[in-house]
Amino acid sequence: MASSQVIPTRMELGRQKRRLVTAVRGHKLLKDKRDELMRQFLELVRENKALRESVEAKLRKANANFVLARAAGSDQILNTALLAPKQQVFLDMTVKNVMSVEVPVFEKKTRTENEGDIYSYGYAFTPPQLDDAVESLSEVLPELLRLAEVEKSCRLMAAEIEKTRRRVNALEHVIIPDAQTKIKFITMKLDENERSTQIRLMKIQDMMVAEAIEKAKAQGL
Image 1 (cartoon, helix red, strand yellow):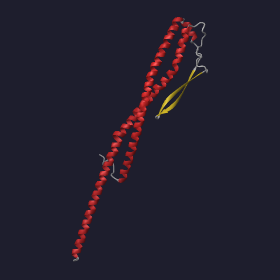
Image 2 (cartoon, helix red, strand yellow):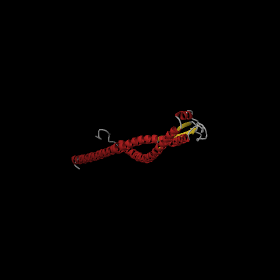
Image 3 (cartoon, helix red, strand yellow):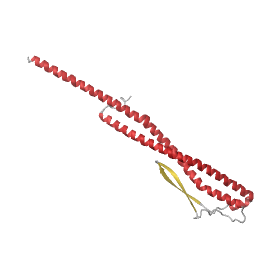
Image 4 (cartoon, helix red, strand yellow):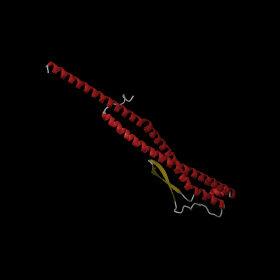
């Protein structure tokens, strides 16, 4: 199979050796990249699990506070109080390069400098449970944004790990063995050609010696 794919010359042997060196170096670099990606991916997975549990717990608490607020006041009072939000949140997204993977970074900004300025209603006609509900919902936002960052980063890193794994396998099981097989084949062919050349030279030398002897006999020497 190798004989039909490669011409056994010294130039081709040098090219295949350079190809093998490059493939081995690339294999090591990609393995190191894969291992580091896996390490960071596992850290993100653990952080993702903790964040999701925390966010879900805080959302359950916020929902419970809203249920208590609804029980303490009428729907009309609550709907009127929450009709026009006082604070606005703006989201900026940048990217961070992690092992050639561009993961998102979210940064929130509020309309006013005071992030706690979130109550759009007066306290006289609303139940105190509504304050707790609005506050608990506001507190979950930073962790919710971080959770979105981590989950997206996990998906991107998982895709990069799979891509890197396929490249490592291709180098390890296809490209490197192929280069080694071709180097072995070319080396064997070159050695065989060298032996054949030596044998031909020896035969030519023997023929020349025999011819010289015959000439000497013919001349009576």
